Image (cartoon, rainbow, N blue to C red; front, side, top):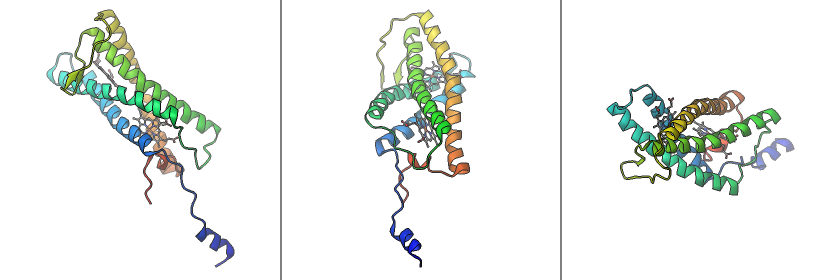
Length: 192
Ligand code: HEM
Ligand code: HEM
């Protein structure tokens, strides 16, 4: 065994900087909630208004969306207090800028979507349920024109979130399976 080999054996591998438990908890719980809300929203978009299944699924959609609204406020507060971990493998300037822009876009959409959804339902005089447990307070006056504007914004935001989330997931899979770096591992618990 050469001195170099000994060095390799003795040196513990540099630990990978990861998102902490709270950051990972916010990320994965919100990923599940938001993807579920998106799929339900997409399904409902193809059902005629007033149809029973659509009404039932929209109650789920609104409940999930309002849960996302509460979580994103807490998540942003935590993120402002605690930064993302540094990258172990240098990403390159362009890649780094693209990741930061996508993350900022995701945070913006995670606020924009539930806020426009709330505004659409609140101003339209529609239900604002939380899983058949209670109704959220209606803090805007009933105003059909305003509700219509909010609905349009929500539908445009839906296109944006389909696109940005799609790119975000594709990028995570590309890093993991093609580039084979540690970007996805940063968002996973330590495996050993
Ligand atoms: C993270 C939160 C949310 C996301 C990602 C989201 C996403 C979506 C998507 C993808 C659609 C389907 C749009 C389409 O393709 O036509 C939709 C529709 C809808 N969303 Fe949301 N939404 C969220 C929160 C909310 C909230 C909080 C409410 C109400 C309290 C709400 C109410 C609605 C309604 C009523 C529709 C049907 C609109 C229509 O067909 O005219 N959403 N949403
Ligand atoms: C299967 C689905 C998903 C996978 C595999 C995934 C994977 C990842 C990974 C690996 C990171 C760390 C990236 C880095 O360090 O550069 C990350 C960060 C992030 N993800 Fe996802 N993600 C998924 C779904 C989502 C969804 C649905 C959203 C929100 C709509 C989201 C929002 C974010 C945000 C905002 C960050 C940045 C966190 C920060 O630095 O504060 N992710 N995701």
